[in-house]
Amino acid sequence: MKYMLQLALMILMFNHVLAQKFTPQVQKFIAIDTSIVAITNTTLIDGTGAPIKHNQTIILKDKLILEVGNSEQIEIPEMALIIDGTNKTVIPGLVMMHEHLFYTKFFEDWFSIGQMSFTFPRLYLAGGVTTMRTAGSIQPQSDLNVKKWIKEGKMTGPKMDVTSPFIERAGSPIAELGFIENTSEVSEIVNFWAKRGVTSFKLYNRITQEDMVVCIEEAHKRNLKVTGHLCSVTYEEASNLGIDNLEHGFMASTDFMANKVVNQCDPFEARQSLNDEPIDSPRVNKLIDLLIQNGTTITTTPNVFEPWTNRELIPGGGELAVAPDVLQDVKNIYDRLSGKDSLHLVRFNKNLIWLKRFYDQGGKLMAGTDPTGAGRTVAGYANRRTIEILVEAGFPLQDVIKICTLNGAIYLEQDEQIGTVEKGKIADLILISGNLEDHIKNIRNMELVFKEGIGFNSKLMFESVKGKVGLN
Image (spheres, rainbow, N blue to C red):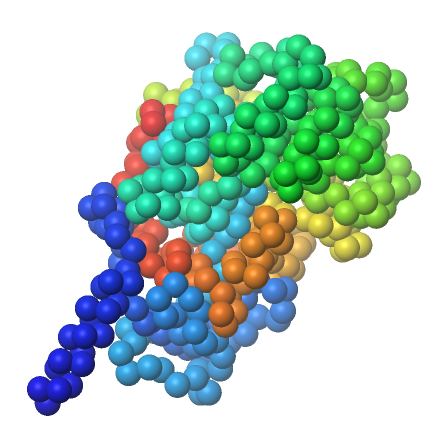
């Protein structure tokens, strides 16, 4: 008996040495910090796109997934903490690819971008995001610091890949953007931020094809990637120039404008051209074929484009997260536009149809949220809503989970470590109350978000930032 007690004590001490150190500010959200965990008798959507599996047991040991399989065939280690997964669902931790640590705020007829270095990382993790890419930054040094502090256990949030500041020319009425005046500045930006740890670069609305060529060449020299929210350059032009990624599905495409001027952006005419383009347009099909042939990845961000009429004020249910004064401004815009967004709805639905066509034909598709727009897109809540929207659009559930997990991991070249719930991979996964097959809105019932084997309490993280979004 004495020997068994000594052995147990040694095991506990060994596990303590292995455990990551967290500050008290992070520890208060940790529900599970045990070396061996067994989630039993659960439903599993593993992220590979394979059929949904029932009666599964998942064994976690330290940071890794030790075993996954049918509950009747898995032997549970004696020292394991057992979590009953009956009537619950496990999916991989989300790998979301168009995220920001900032949020759009409004004042009278103006809007500004406010850095959310503290609320958003916590909200992302609460919403199941265990890995994220910032698709453009207004304070890249802040983003890099947050990434470092999360990794060190000083802040609560997901693992992060940080993207450069927006590379843009003058014209966008956003004070927080820096603007280049000539193409030579592009290589300077790539060199400066690559040395400081960013993993990708973001091209914006009014850049030129020459700017794009330099950015792609300089980034690819360093094995880094380039994405774009485009307007002045068409999708066809960008894909043929070798861009890795296009943002916002087809919502930012200017390929269907009747009189498109090279290197010029007319966002109003671009939106009208999307309204006018038939769903089964040969031009759309030709563009889809080209993007697939070139291997260009598309990120869909449906949440930020969600129409106003008969929709939630904050899609995903995050009204209580937003500071009251900021929320009132958002509501004023919502009330003003609700019932007047029929064309917006046409574009929204058309984009989803084209994206499914792209995906069904083998296109590389991943997902993100983009917490900007009219202030309705809030980190965490938006990530869960994105899954709902894609299911509502007709994507099979297991494909939606793959789009929001494995596909992002593949793009980040991290798919050997994350993106699926498989033996040997890092223990990034989400325990959800309820069955997603029966009701997709059960995605909002996240209980535990495991990041590298540590289980965080989703509800506590959401509650901790109530009324703070828009402030910090």
